[in-house]
Amino acid sequence: MKVTVFGIGYVGLVQAAVLAEVGHDVVCVDVDENKVARLQDGEIPIYEPGLTPLVQSNYQSGRLKFTTDASEGVSHGDLIFIAVGTPPDEDGSADLKYVLAVAETIASNMQKYKIVINKSTVPVGTADKVREKIATVLQTKNKNIDFDVVSNPEFLKEGAAVNDCMRPDRIIIGTHSAKAETKLRELYAPFNRNHDKVIVMDIRSAELTKYAANCMLATKISFMNEIANLAERFGADVENVRRGIGSDPRIGYQFIYPGCGYGGSCFPKDVQALIRSANSVGYQAKILESVEAVNYTQKEKLFEYIMGHFDHDVKGKTVALWGLAFKPNTDDMREASSRVLMEKLWEAGARVQAYDPEAMEETQRIYADQPNLKLMGTKEAALAEADCLVICTEWQAFRAPDFELIKNKLKQPLVFDGRNLYEPSRMKEYGLQYYAIGRGLSVKGYQ
Image (cartoon, rainbow, N blue to C red; front, side):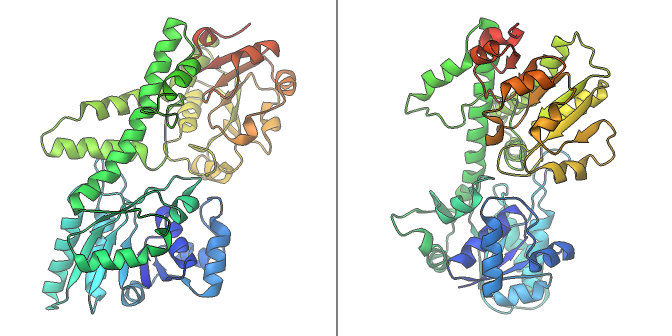
């Protein structure tokens, strides 16, 4: 099938590459000339496991193309995906200017029936706005062309996006058009062979499903962080609590790991957007407001531990930081907990020596002018002459370190763990003072 994807960001590029991999003829359109040129040269602008060979092989085969020519893209695709960003506006609501700009571009260039597919995460009612925009442009150009608008939200996890796209657990199609449904079923047939993963519903329900999914997961994280905060005060161990409640199949173990807050391009933005959408229809989403508030507070947790330990004076201290990306297997630092911590440490007069397996270049881009940041080539190098070690991201490379080396390299045998990677009893055996999230008495550290 002939497919066009507008927007070669995280979602658009992964979706395009996977569709090309199963045999579809895909053209990607983006206004960023540099990004398009880099992709044509085989350079992938984001880090995602398995994505680079997928893009390169399908580009070389001719099934995947990149262009800045919107008219070429519209002419090519019978199915046209909108996969551009919906960044938060000043009030936290989703900014639809890029989505509507693509809709206008499609309408300005279309000469025959098209299926326009909203892949971007958008508020309920966006498909109506896209349809209205296309219809208005066609009318001004005196064109009488039929088209359909479909909601087809993505459910990709950064770090596992290629697998999620190749083996989706569900494919949501929001449409009232039998013709569009048939075409979308044909498009996704290669991913729908073992059992029927397609769920067809009305457009507004499909739009709300995406927000509801991300907000539910964010709620589980904030709930567990709230329990961790209680565990600290009660002298309980949140890891025991997690195992106790996770064994209940109604709850499960996923997304109940306490830590120093969630980040990324989805959860913070989508929780805010659904709160603002609720406000727009006269409803106060109290649970979501609490989810957002707990997460905001949780991102300051490590800084509070550090300041409490050093009697609220870290001026001149050097902090070794392991983990900069908001989660493992990505270089994405959007809304990362590490950023909140580093900026607070710098404000308090501390220096940071940081290491991350993938996010070093992104960190350099964001904080190029920060004199109190030193990016180190290895996790061991980050420890040298530092006053303490802080862990913000649960990369596999950090799960089984040389604890004796940590103790010997640091000025003080002191670890602040924002992801609960280690057992407090083991840290005590190594003579390391250990602060973790919700580990009961360990909040005061082991001497």
